[in-house]
Amino acid sequence: MSHDVPIGAHHVGLAQLNERSREIFRQIVESYLATGEPVGSRNLSRIISMSLSPASVRNVMSDLEQLGLIYAPHTSAGRLPTELGLRFFVDALLEIGDLTESERREMEARIAASGKSVEAVLDEASTMLSGLTRAAGIVLTAKVNARLKHIEFVRLEPERALVVLVSEDGQVENRVFNVPKDLPTSSLTEAANFLNARIRGRTLAEAKADLEKALEADRAKLDQLTQRIIEAGLASWSGGEREDRKLIVRGHANLLEDLRALEDLERVRLLFDDLETKKGVIDLLGRAEQAEGVRIFIGSENNLFSLSGSSTIVAPYRDSAGRIIGVIGVIGPTRLNYARIIPMVDYTARLVSRVLGG
Image (tube, rainbow, N blue to C red):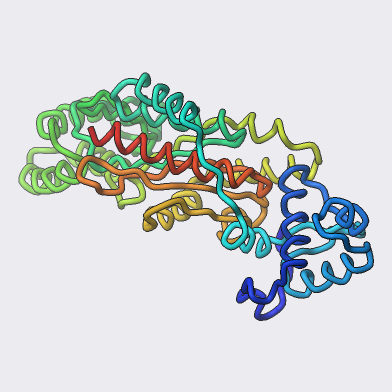
């Protein structure tokens, strides 16, 4: 949904829209959010609260189009909001609802019942958000603080192996990495023994620093192949900050349920292709982590969704020391129920922070 926006449109202020323009623009957006369909001047003149002829409504629509807030899809007589228009609506005109007391209690009970393991809490939070919002729930969690208990290497193919990491709090992480074809399987066992003698109770960062020292000291004792496998194993699980993260996506079906047009289904397919690559999501959510409250990314505001006409509503969650350790939210078509979803995401992030913080 990328459209040419006139120069200066990004500086649209409420001052430029009189009450009549605001009312018509709000109706166009609300109609789009409810139905996904363009709305024409005849229908608008019937549903707006002030009495205006279709011709007057057309004049206002023309002004809104000049400002880059709405556009005509294909040859339709109706109009839809542009991404700039949606952003303007969310920032300036949206009246955010609040959760009822019973909704809060129900959400609290679900998170509390999920148990105390980080994995279970995040999994439940993501599934819950997906069900409540009819969008796909997403969680990006940093794994940097997990203390390790055990490591195992498993040969999958001549040139590929799996590293299995078990942390003290019961989380298990699997990663596949490449190994030299001529590597004897005994080297995998040797490497696992070497690591298990040194990693217990350490975080990934601590283990990496200790192991680099140990490799230096034991270089003579270890044969070259074992050294290579340890280095490969290390690189696969404790690389840069971004590699220490994991993405959880729940509720793909919810995204598809609500979409009729083939074009929308194609967008969602592209979206999941994008999600599979994960890097775009991690960059996007990395930016969201900087924020205190809820962040909303609409359409081509980020590269990930330039093709998929999607929106993400996310909020950071924290550990007991108040540090941001991940991001939780939902991802769906730009036609999301923002007024309802924003407080849900916000409250879920607070619940998760409370449970994980202890």
